[in-house]
Amino acid sequence: MELILKQDVEGLGFKDDVVTVKNGYGRNFLIPQGHAILATTSAKKVLAENLKQRAFKEKKIVDDANTLAEALKALEVKIAAKVGTGDKLFGSVNNINISEALEKEGHSIDKKFITVAGGSVKRLGKYNAVVRLHREVSVDLAFEVVPQA
Image (cartoon, rainbow, N blue to C red; front, side):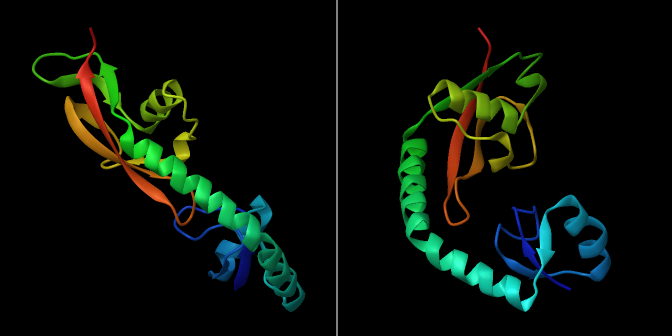
C-alpha cells in the first residue's frame, strides 16, 4: 500500500515522503491516526506541486538549521547530576535533560529530536548525543555529566 506521510513517522520516513507499507499498518494505524493519506494519482500531483513551491522556503530552513548546527558544535554542555558512590548517578541523564540544558543556553530544541547513545547515561563523564535539526541536518552534540555541587 502506497501512502503519503502527513508528518514524520519514526523508523518510516519524513513528512511528504511516499512510502510503501503493509496494508494492515496503513489501514489500521497510519491513516486513522492522521499520519498518512492514500497515495492516489491526484494526491501525488498535489504533493509534487506543493514540493516544488516549497523548495525555495526549504533552502532557507536548511541554511538556518546549518547555522544552528554550527552554534551547537561550539557549545560546551555540562549537566549537573546527583552522584552516589564512585561515579554512578542517582537516576540518569537523557534527552529531556539535554533539551533543558540547551534551553538554558538559549537554543530551544524539542526533546524528541535529541537521541542519546544507549538511551540514557548513568555515570559521570563525556558523552555524545545526536540532534536532528532538519531531515538533512543533524549534529553530534558533546556533553559532559558532572557531579552536582
